Length: 503
Image (cartoon, rainbow, N blue to C red):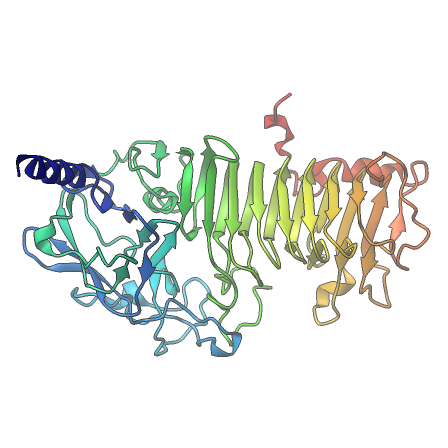
């Protein structure tokens, strides 16, 4: 009998030391960032239910601050089910006083949206009140990550979390939800970073000024003339990132492979408004299908990190609307349209990988010693005569199956007659012999030009089958053009970031 009691005590101690779940923030945690995620680590892979509520309560008043209803689908899964924008008139389904009309005014910044009765999960990111569809829970292996609505938690406040039975289940049925009595409570930091602070730390484990990159970007004032630096520590950041109206910000990762910013987003899940076909017009931004979005920004630097969308389809890893956007040592993974760039951008030693039309946008863009990997056409450039298109200097193009063309055009866009893509001393691997596709009948203003394109063995590319209307630059006859395109300042309105690059 004594041995049995000893065994039971031992098993009880082991159970206490090795709980069925681990929580982040931990139960009773202090100094928690208000932009925290809620994470439960299980012993086995959990399954997401189709009903039930997750609630965050003010511990002092028991008032519900935020709620997630699992009976609401995350977003569309079929193109035919696209809703009409905007996605929300009132921002969230939570027990809060009604916000003012100024907070929920639709059509910002696209200016074209109208109210609708959408029934998908909605969150407002970066004050873009047209809204984004999002996943309230994402499960990765044994980790369930819960995403509260943005910017609802406050500093110096204690909260507790409740989860209905059935929201998450395990095969052994050991998880029956969380009640107030279970004690998943935490208290946020007393104050935000000081207003004069110009260097911010993002850490996924909560040890920095912010837990998410979005939290840091929301802290930085719009149109600031001050220089801000956001250091992102190594970690997995599964979050939709959208910011606009930012100036003079550097986002630098601890290491290129160690900082992974990603989200499962695409055109089906977060579609364009049906009454705005494209974002071909400066100042409009109906597209919200990328994992990482920079909108109406100037003098932004991204360095030493990886950005990715994890869904297939029309799905950029990175989408840019802005001027003087500088990327150094950044990896961008997407699907159709992996990178969309509208405005002056400079890419240095970046890697861009996609499934086709891998680089999209109006430009002007300068790619310096970059690697572009694509399953379909490498680019669909849509510049007009108002600016240059895409210029590639000492870059490498690698096709993945089927030998894709370097670029294509379409008569549906007026820019088809003014498209510009120029390659200066680039290396081509598994690229179609014709090189270019869809050129208009009148190619007099199209610049699909190459100088000294080589294969992986450094041999000149056979240009004999290149598409009519494209051009091979001659080192003697076209030396002025070659010199012109070798200088980024000629392409980017006088801006040349090369002076800040490592020697």
